[in-house]
Length: 342
Image (cartoon, rainbow, N blue to C red; front, side, top):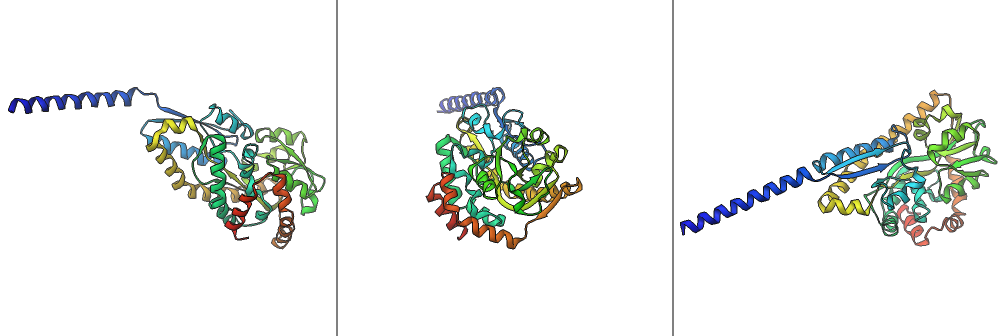
């Protein structure tokens, strides 16, 4: 009996030792999972700052199982091309604007609906974090075969900017050639005010602006500031909180499978836990961006809330036509309007 116990214990110890060495060799020998992330905004942009922080947290939490690389300023792909690159496996992660996804999932553009013109950010979050957002995330995941990591990241409200022509009121937009980041509803809004839409990829904007390709653009205070568009001739801004720009955190399916259940849970939790802080930082950056533009000599005019309310009411009367033009699902619109209580 004593001999059998000793042999059993010895065998067990030997198996444990072999297993331990196998685990050790696996941990040391395996190549880390690589996450390449492509952004087309400048390193100081709030999205870049947040994603850089996120990638660092993933590396730390993975204990060396994951290695990340961030490609900025469109050095790999502009956002208008990054969704296709993500699906094709040329990058593992991207955080594109909703307007760049509309070619694949038109419903992704719903934050630009007339219902949100001149409204507060809390109203937008009700919709993106509600049934409307869930509906669109499910569509994105199904149609693109990607994983949506969680709630959307704020770019901030878009406003109007121009080079030579002063912007004192919304009527000044009439006849202007205005750069749109993409998406049917951004172009629809430009036309609503009598402008002419021009879609130009963000990395190409500084040169195009300096060459007079367009007279002005839709963007956010921090985006134009971080890209130093005042060096390319930007001189005026009219602020109307016309539509909330949002970024969708995406990873391709190959990467998601490689991560496995435990790391998948870690990644999604890191996004959810840190998103509120990133949103706060973005709001502060937008305020700072506006102040920085003023220091650079950019004139900034706020459209009075009473006028915003009047325009909002007028736009709502045309929302059904805008929805049809943008090929947005009527079912989604019902969910969104219920989310915001309209």
